[in-house]
Image 1 (tube, one colour):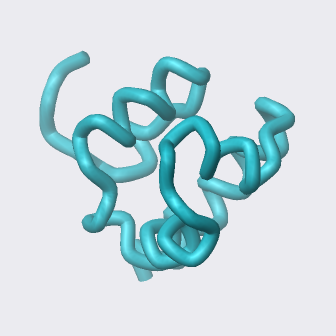
Image 2 (cartoon, one colour):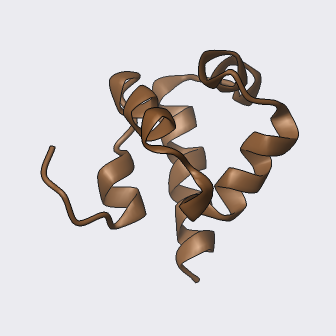
Length: 70
């Protein structure tokens, strides 16, 4: 269930920030299939990717339910 909520929130963030998936792939230097896998299984995101998405304006900490301070 956590994964599905993350997927919904991730799509909402993309829409809110007006990013297309292909743009995120370029920024994160990953392929589209890899991004799809990470969206379906958020535990696969690396710290570098999480920080990069946060720098773009994504609210990743809340979406991933991580327990650390920014």
